[in-house]
Length: 531
Image (cartoon, rainbow, N blue to C red; front, side, top):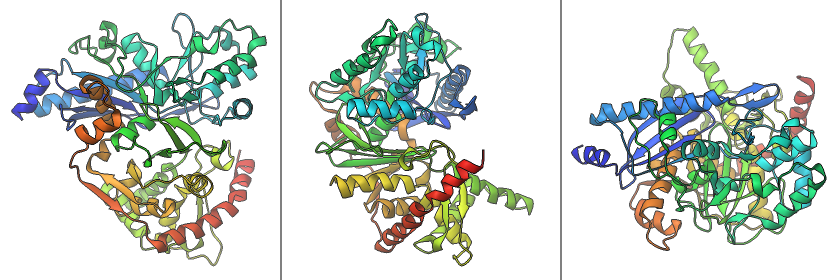
């Protein structure tokens, strides 16, 4: 305890703060990246005029509340005020669109990754670039606004991601970590910067619009992990901590996306390493040892925080519908006077699922709260379907909802493994889907037919990964790669649990997917009919 107090007093800590889809979380570590304090703030996106968004007040009120709770945790545990840290960093859910005019004013409400409103732009840019541009990418949002002839486009002076925006306001620097930048516009890994040929092609597409800008002029500067990204300004310190306790001048590392911090938090930045983040959304990533043969609409190409190419399968929907059903069972328990805590409720239902048939007894579910581009949906309707003679019981019901949370993910990963011969020796897992050990990891291993590894530290997730990136910026040796640093300075001797795929589960998941693919017509009918 006295050592930690001294570490805090001397400002030898590292701080990572990440804006997730449903929670903003801060993690403070010591010099060896052991978490010593944390804070959190729950938030939720809203559907405003058909656009999934968070307001600026949501962002700043949430950040301040999260940081305040971190400082309260520090005070409670160590009787210390947090006045300074050795370095800090901010990360957030990737993609989306935040566009600003020359005075720094937001031109339109923040359009998050969850939106599926840029289909036309995505198709045109994919064909023009010969490179898959998903709907949620920032450049797709900008080009769709151009196609829609939105008045604000002519005023755009700068556009960025959520992490890039927060970093800019706290440091004054319009920069972005390469991993997050790879979800704005394609990256050329050989130069760790935006692809010059594609930048020129985009300028050619808009040349007749006379906007007065080149695309290079309005994108953030790209930085690799470890590069200097500025310092916390006086104004930024007050934005983060209105009490005035936090000092300005703290070094801040490049802002990253949640994909990049997930790679770092699971030590998955080397070739043939993979990781999965499964919560409100789910995505898997594999660091590639060879280029893909062609572009696939189901696959994104992003990068590690140091710029290596990564194949990503990103699905908009994962646990939202599953959580909704669990909440229904909670309501029933309350109605009969049996209040239950989350651990008991989730643990009971999840473990019950593992008693079900490997193929879910024929039961079928879709977890589409929003659109799912991998299966071609711009909108979603959560639904459950069964035939009269299917095996309808609680175990199969819960198992079907666990399986369907990974249905779209499996489709994308099957392309990688079966068509492109991409190998992953294992996947590290993190996120709420893995909270109940022996359930989420077992289901994921069955879906991907690959071992799933869980770390003790995986629960800290993205903000812990961002704290590590802050420390890497300050402590790396000359020429020391991020992969080497993680292997030799961070992940040394930590406990890892491995779940190998069970052959019966793998076969059962494949059977479930036959129903899943055949039943997409049901989901289409629901979208068309339930307006």
